[in-house]
Length: 254
Image 1 (cartoon, helix red, strand yellow):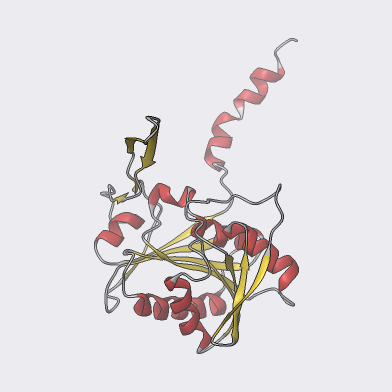
Image 2 (cartoon, helix red, strand yellow):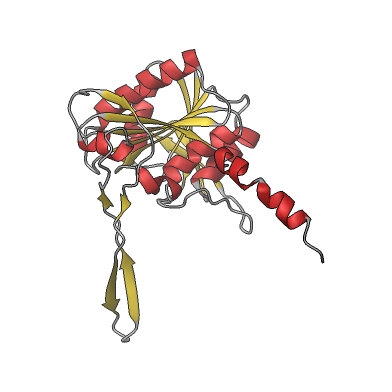
């Protein structure tokens, strides 16, 4: 299986390196990742600056390619310009911290997988619930899940957002829906030496879900959360409810 591996933490991040090692045992892996930290880049793409490509070697061998852009840039450029063939699957991660609830809207990890899904490629975004977690365990699980996705496939425009508890051994899995947990809503005010006010935004995830079927609640119970995410953000039920507006506004005189 040909795998494109990326992340939002940069090409030298531990999560990516450990995951590449696990995937290399069974598959052909190409790494195309940002040249530095791009956490919370969401689905941004770079339009007004060039994308600089660098070849990264480790121990005298090609490790991958770094891009001076966002996670979504990495996927787009890899698929359209760098790879000789479309990958069978795109994997983004392993992110050192959860991506649950509303965090999905901010996450570069998730958006890289979303970009792949938009391009019609099966994709997985994977995160672990600790910056210093059991990465080898998470990597092995991700490899097994990738093998399953390759065999079973995913519908067009659907990708998997996976959150793995920090455990030495996986205890259970739950297929979940996106919840409401997210980054703490807090800003920390500071004053610099020139008496100017500046702020640090809170970055800790708060698990506020009480519904056991949600991603955040399942992760807090030490279960792997697997959430199928749809790229199409249309509320189709609301379209039906609002149809009457067509008649109302069509009858209005200029």
